[in-house]
Length: 69
Image (cartoon, rainbow, N blue to C red):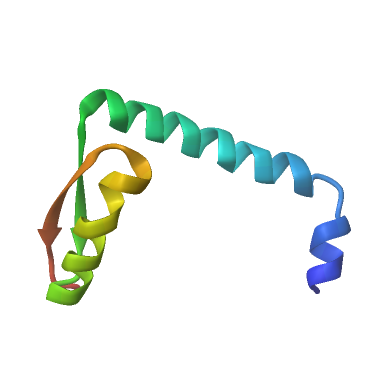
């Protein structure tokens, strides 16, 4: 199945399309300076995201703990 996906026509353009969209999203977030993200109410997840996100992407996260139910 994986081999079929890799060699299927249109696979490469689909990959570059999501990458292009991701780059646009990152640029918009950098201009805004902060992104609000809904996450599960986990202190461990919050700590992990807060510690590494700005260093990797260059903008702040405002985390909004939300339950799924």
